Image 1 (cartoon, rainbow, N blue to C red):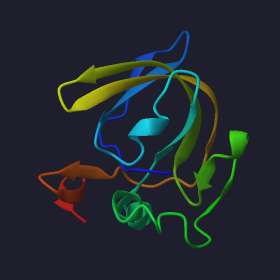
Image 2 (tube, helix red, strand yellow):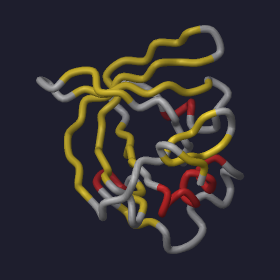
Image 3 (cartoon, rainbow, N blue to C red):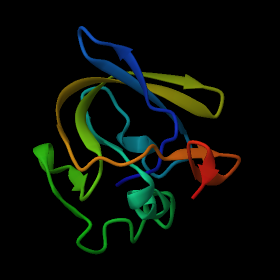
Image 4 (cartoon, rainbow, N blue to C red):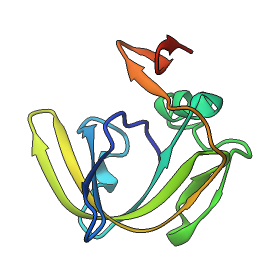
Length: 130
C-alpha cells in the first residue's frame, strides 16, 4: 500500500515526530491506525515518476523493481533522497481528511537531488516546472 502525500512536516525534534495529511477516502486510510508503521520517502525531480506512480492505480504501485522490503516489511523506494520509518502515534480526522502524527524510528539518506514541489496539480522544482 502506498500513496503520495504533499504535506510532510516536522513536528518535534525531541522526540522526533512528523505529520502528514491524507484524504480519508485514500486506499491507504485503513492502515492509518495507532501502532502501525509507515515508510515515508522524500523525492526529487529525478524520482518524480515515483510520486506519480504512488498517486496512481493502487493495484500496480508496487509492480516492478523500484522498491525493496524494509523494516517491518514496508516498501522502501529506490533512489529517493531520504526515507524514514515512523510509528503512527495519533490520528486526527478533520472533515474528509486527517492529520497523521508519526514517531520517527529509523531512516536513511539516498542520492542528493533538488526539491520536488507540487502546486496547482503540477510538479515543480523551486523556480520552475518539471
